[in-house]
Length: 145
Image 1: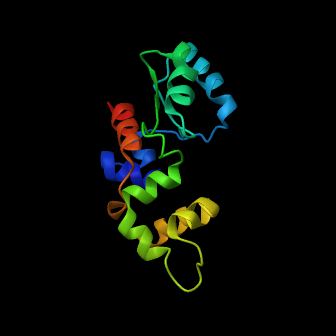
Image 2: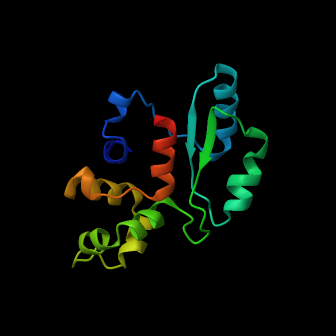
């Protein structure tokens, strides 16, 4: 997220005074309740899990507020962050995850090895080389406004 923040806003997360919390899907609404109560600007970035209408719009319709917004890929085929990253950075991912040690196709490898894939992308590419998926760019621009 720090690499994306740097490429989208020109600042690191700390310099932009952004705080990132990884939250399990069932806890999002509790954090949105806190954001409302404390009037804290909050961007929720989540996977659409194959049904953005149900999982990202209808699921949060009672949490629409000025200081909080949910961001997600609006294409149901882009159901996870890894798929969005692959599609947005296809050339980099194909080059990095196609070799003799990796037997599965790059996108399949990324889905099966999420943390390892993310670390390899960061280790092998400068932040400016990695393109954030559109919904993450939107979230960073919105939270920075």
